[in-house]
Length: 347
Image 1 (spheres, rainbow, N blue to C red):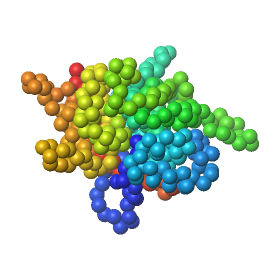
Image 2: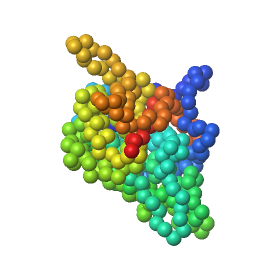
Image 3: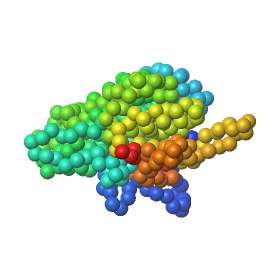
Image 4: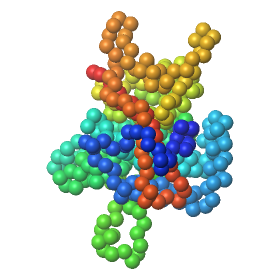
């Protein structure tokens, strides 16, 4: 989904003393700079041709279409899609992977390894996830530096379903190939280096499929099979764009999503801080925070006083993911600031 204006210049100044919530929490592991480097390398390899040429003219064209909210034009060409993914998805992926690490005590996506048994699989549906930030973050989340079993490998595999309005198929396929393929290595590399050179995640532990659907205008008879048995649903920098398109259709979509998901499923919302949408009531326009609209739909009681279907596990109105200055990438990346909401569907 389009980059938020809130994040457009999110690098804090050196004299900025404002308190903020960092990506890490004291109780969760920290995503190492080494792993962040591996994730950035996924994007560098996937879009090498785009990044090694002069990407800035294309980038300005995409920005212009996004500014004019002409999403059909912005996401209507393969070179635009690659440019978007190469520019905005890397920093988001780094923010998402740390958020997943922080949330793992609630999510339980990674289970204990059992000797001689196949790794259990979690189905994760990324709504609006065509640009690949979620895919790369989830691959990084399985890396042994974060989760290590007794045999030295992740004890969980992911089956990822990405759904978006534009045709991001080739972007998803490129990123999926890169996360499951070892990076190129010099023919003069030592035997030890060759032995240590491995893909970010093993192919049999990581599967991703893309489906092109307009979430607000696709019948749930089509979406239901894609949502079946999902452990986690993500809406990353997508929900506020849906609200901006149509609040009523978005509310209807969220209710349909609620009906389609199994009990114990999690819904993770990440979006720009301070996102508002305008509602017209009786001829008067009023702005409501995205968070209020979301809670109004998911946490309200039934007409007969039944308990709400969703339980809010946690919320955070403002998180920073500040990128270490040591990270290298062919084009400049920015720090990421976002709001986060995690819900669990009750049984």
